[in-house]
Every structure is written in structure tokens, then in C-alpha cells.
Image (cartoon, rainbow, N blue to C red; front, side, top):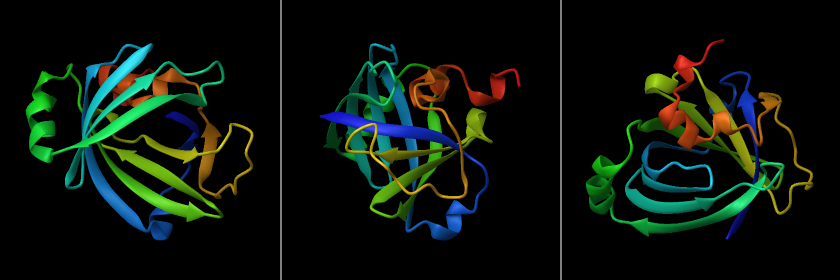
Length: 157
């Protein structure tokens, strides 16, 4: 139930040529408090209810509990969510023994592309793709819950 991952900005869309899957994701937050988030997600033809705890000091690990629910149930819960819906396409790219999940955001977050890699522990080595940019692990601005309330296109550059 502990998720350990690192997050990065993405330099280019070169990852799209390497992707073996891509799925549209719509998600909202019943609770977006940094201490705990409760998310409703529709990913492709499945729905999910996810609860995440507060991140550790480095931002790499936190408790995550997820349960698959029907798309119909997710559709009924999404209108109950806080304002601000996340709309993105998730691409998956295998590199070495890891899978990178790359999220290309749309709507008020258009222009933002973030890659995540899940690790066994925060010091685990991984093969770094050439399109991987600056690490943003632990920067709460790049958490989806934050982006739902403070869209990327409203940030002062």
C-alpha cells in the first residue's frame, strides 16, 4: 500500500513513439487536502476510487489505496467532486525493468507533460530516457490534486 515514485517534467513528445499504451483519464477530487486525497477516476473503460496519504519528506513515498469501481459509479461520483477536473492522456513506456507513465494534460493544464516512474525504494536505479527533464518529485504544484485547484495555465511563468 506504499507507493514510491519519482516525477519529472518531459522535454519533448518523443516518448509517444515508444508508448505501448495510451488511455484517456478524467478525474476529480472528493478531497484534495495535502494530508489525504480522495480521488475518483475514469481511465479508459474502468472507474477507480483512490485514497492517498501525505507524502514522506522527500515526496517519493506515500500510502495509496485504490479500488476499481464501475464507470457508472465513477460517473455518479464525479459531479460530487471539488471544482477542477483533470483531463489527460496517459502513455506507458517501458525502459529497462521499469514502466514510465507519462501524462499529457489538457484543458486548463494544457502544455504540461509529467512522467512518473514507480520504484521499489527511492534510491533504486532506473534507466533515464533522453526525453526526461527536470525532476519535480516532492513539488506539490505537480500533484494532480493541486493542479485541479491551481491549473498550470494560471501559474505565473
